[in-house]
Amino acid sequence: MRQIPAFFYLYQYYALPEEFASAEVFLAAARRKPTMTLLHLRETACVAPYFIEEDCELVRLRIEKPDRIRPLEVSLLTAEEYAAQLTKITAEKCISCWYHDHPIGKDKRDDRAKEMTLDGLCLLHTESEKPYTLIDAADGFWSDLLQAEDAVRKPLFDGNLTEAADALSVIYARHFACAAQTIFAVNRSIGQRYLMFGALSPEARVVSRYVISRAPREVTEYWLLFDHLPRGLSRYIPIPGYDLLQYPPTVEFSASDSLAKRWKLTVYTPPAAGGVQATRETYRWLCAVLGEDLLYTRAAELEIEVSSDYAHHRSVREFAAALRAEGGFFFRYAIAREFSRPVELLLPPGDRGSRIAPERMSTVTPSLSIELTGRMFSGLLSRVVDDWRIPVCTLTLTLDDPGKRRQQSALICGELVIDLQRDGLIALLDIAQTEDKLYLNFFATAGGETIEALRDLAPEFAEMSPTLTVRTHKETAVMQLNYTLDLIHRVINRQEVAYAT
Image 1 (cartoon, one colour):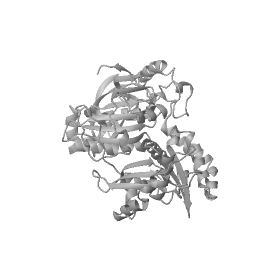
Image 2 (cartoon, helix red, strand yellow):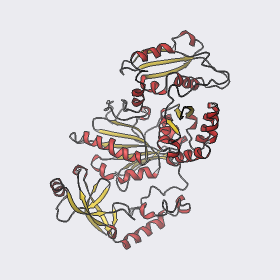
Image 3 (spheres, one colour):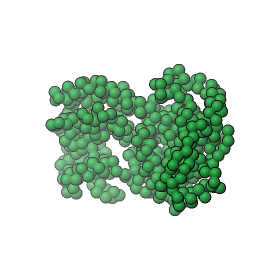
């Protein structure tokens, strides 16, 4: 095994040509003459930063983005050397792994050479039992729906929308522990069938949005999918003993001082009995009357209060009139687009005890915008992580160079995160930026695969002192994001274990 200088460029590895004394000299040459012949270090049956000599090949490459060159050092081995070391490591590491006795497909799980590094790191195959992942759950939901689609289609065409929605809920509950936080609605018009996911909490909406992103063509060719309950398509159907059409809720509202063209909205609803959830039914009614997209984009604050004195407040028509006056209804399509646009969020007190308003960036659920550093977690996160078995992660990057901050933020929040989401590896919760820190909070949708994908991008983050915090139902681990994912500290059952940095 020998060490050689190399560089990482657009997700690929190349050896640094011997005629260049350093990466800086090579970079200067690449700016002058972008097309050159290079030795491509291919990850065919190996994992970076270890490569097999026989698999490398000469290629002609045009370097159009020299700023994306990341210098590093890699190890080069013969195929025989690599196989010998890998055999020794897998004999020690793989024997207790669930996948060792339960291979999944001929091409997906049986090639350990593409998954186990020569450092003995394999995030994909370290489980004693099969892990729960959002990718498997989402794909399983759509597969079951296609097999039992008549249970939804028939009541839909018979006009029994409640029965169709209940059938969807049953299928969804097979795969998601957050099913109780997700409600469904279906409807149809000429030539269109609508399938709508509603969420009773921000984190449940992130899950449903991710599920929609995994919908196969066989579904999208037939159903028009929404990650919210739009006005006019989601019908409110009263449940026995609680009819909000006959006794409609009332409202009080005022313009928000902090957010332009948004409102503080309080909804007063009649009491319910017999186990009926008044707030849940009122939220369904609001979605049918106003549309969930309007609630998210126009209500800076929304509170539902159960009150026997509910009738002595303002009609919801008055709130609708205020929205109409500012173009709320006339620009519904623009509002729908805004529904998925960034909103401002605040980070909790940082290391210096300050609260800094970050740049306007991307977020779906501000309630989960926290820096996970092993401290106590909120009940909200406990439900997601402990009850739903979904790992929550934070990638923290330090932006030391003021001249590079905007460029670094644009690259990470744009191309890198988008590529990871496109591969189905991240359900992004939010991105926030302070003066010198960038925080990415996300669901690890594929467990070890998500973290492994981030590890593979370590050269992109190397100059930003990246740390990755992973909170699972078993532990919280903070690690330095590099090829070996060195642990900084770990919290197991609320007992912290310190590691040397």
